[in-house]
Image 1: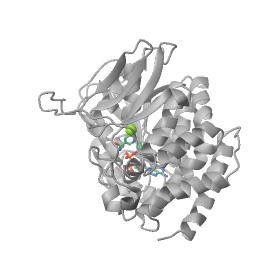
Image 2: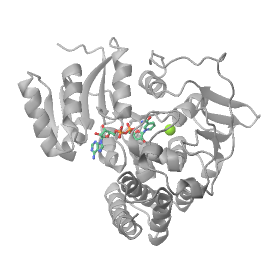
Image 3: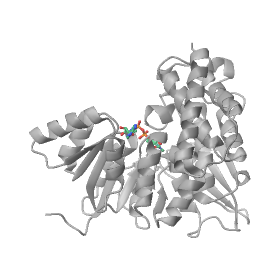
Image 4: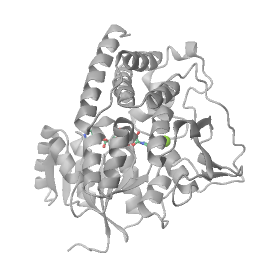
Length: 394
Ligand code: NAD
Ligand code: MG
């Protein structure tokens, strides 16, 4: 027997940092939510654990062999979860008719098709997978409108801005959006100091515990570049109305400045369960498990301008957004390849930005009529980035 009064939730990327934190928030609110579907890439053992705990009706793994292993394991454990396989299986679970809410928490452009499948099914989408917006931009926002989907930002900065904006979004009273950035583990380092940075140092973020790819993006400031593009699309604002400010404590999660000089900020401890809980229950509020901000022990809040010389990725993202068309898809594809190579010790830290810049320069700008065309651009940009990575291998 299932309780139809509970909100049904599907999580795409259930084994990741956002996926696990979403499950933690759901566990704190069992009277409101029921897990319907869980998906992941290939880690079947972790997904099996979640399936045995949460008993979703459906699970899916993008990797077909891993899906087979999960299916056998769950059958032996007496589980009734139905396991789907491959990219089509993940997209099918993303679009289940019975789902009310879909948490889009796959990392990278791999999230594009499943997230769009959820949009096309008209779901309430809790968007963590920023790369989907960076890659598909206008096409994604049009699909949201066309299919009557609801989009709620999970990325902490965008969730903060969402909370600080009027209900009807960015109107004439808003002067600009201020995205805060922690500056990552290498804030204050020079370009020379950054040459010898290791993957271990780069994934060790001072304030947030995140997956490896976004942790490297935070270290290069590409994360803020992707978020800048994400903000343009999500809030329908011109790029020149968004500024980035470094704020090392990650207590102010972002701000909105109004014409009269008022600046509204959303604050809290750096814990992704806050924006996840906010998006899940909006416009109501629920417990998230995040610790409370203690103003008595908060010593200071600092703000400074980003160092664009040591960290060129933010500027590259701005440039790609201004160029428009598929440039942001090229930026994202090159970055994903460069970050993977860096994590694999095949590329130096400073070369990440260089690969992105060169890939952007060598790719003629193009407009894409549909998602298939964007994914072709993505594939070509990856080929080019991979050949540059081979050339510049460390
Ligand atoms: P992660 O690496 O911890 O988890 C990624 C998830 O995606 C895993 O469940 C993995 O199995 C799944 N996945 C990977 N490749 C897949 C594929 N080809 N098909 C299907 N599933 C696949 O990543 P994360 O840190 O949780 O980040 C997820 C997304 O949320 C990213 O877009 C990131 O930028 C965004 N985000 C994360 C945080 C954070 O604190 N972790 C904060 C803001 C935004
Ligand atoms: Mg963020």
